[in-house]
Image 1 (cartoon, one colour):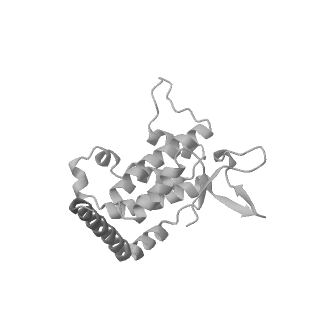
Image 2 (cartoon, one colour):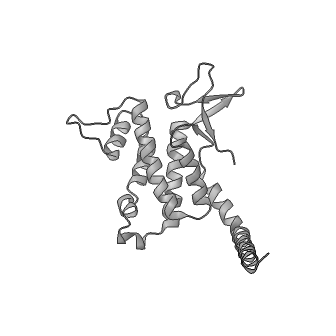
Image 3 (cartoon, one colour):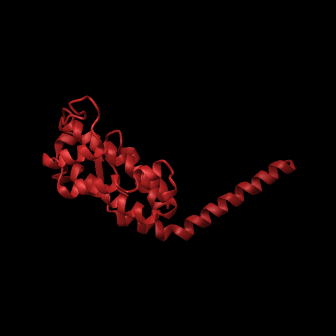
Length: 195
């Protein structure tokens, strides 16, 4: 093996040792962050399901800015999804698209969403969304750890309301079947998060 190969092998081992050390030093914090969210254990297997699960892990691992940005996108995806499932028009009479805030308000007014769920969605939407996504100078003063925690708790509350389910006699019974894709045999396509 030449000197370059030895140098790469040493570098690789140092990186591996650093990663193991960082992981071991932060394991209790990661477990605490994961548990404090109280996320929904199962959600419908829709286009945002994988991103939602990854967002939990991103927060768990301490990537707070990424978790906040993901929470914004997932929240908006869920609102548009719910509006579609209940056949709420997504456009105004002039043909322009309704804003997320308008959709949330209409879903709340129609009693499709509880006030608490609508407020959680508004809380995520109003959590510096534009400043963060456009990297405005304001983000220098944001406590992202706290904001990520709050947004993930809000997201958990939204998902619990939308995808809440019970297991009765070994069968999943969604509280709101309209948000689940029910198969002909009575099963559903679900995304499990049982960790």
